[in-house]
Length: 169
Image 1 (spheres, rainbow, N blue to C red):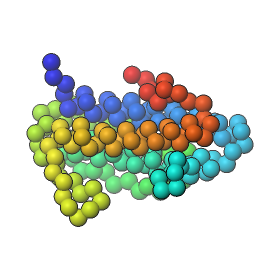
Image 2: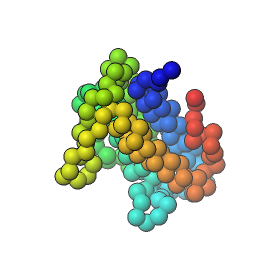
Image 3: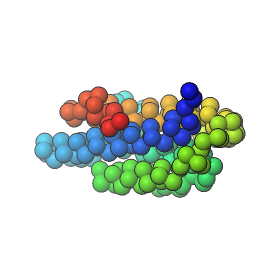
């Protein structure tokens, strides 16, 4: 039995973005209950040269949207990464989830061997098939940023665990 490109992507992105939304709610509630400036959590990072929580969430959303667009051969939505608050991040996540709903199995499945060209921060092009792009680039990048966001919050005392990270599945 084979797995479809859609099944390996969109439901996974939705699951993890929903779990990220839930853990951000817990983080905001924690900050309120403990009288912590929310910005202290939003700007928290694991190491000085790593992105802060705010940016980790932005990049996770960017990867989910761009992968959905590339796999369904549609334009990548342009979204300003100007979020400053937990509420802003919740809207960003909700908007990303809404966009993922436009990426249907009919638009994605059967595209496994179609070529995708990316320019990941350099002038050099990178060529992938859709399947290789998803499995070796888009999903690992996405999970890195979701996991790092989780780790930042856990490191800062938010009472979350593996169930929170996994979300509903």
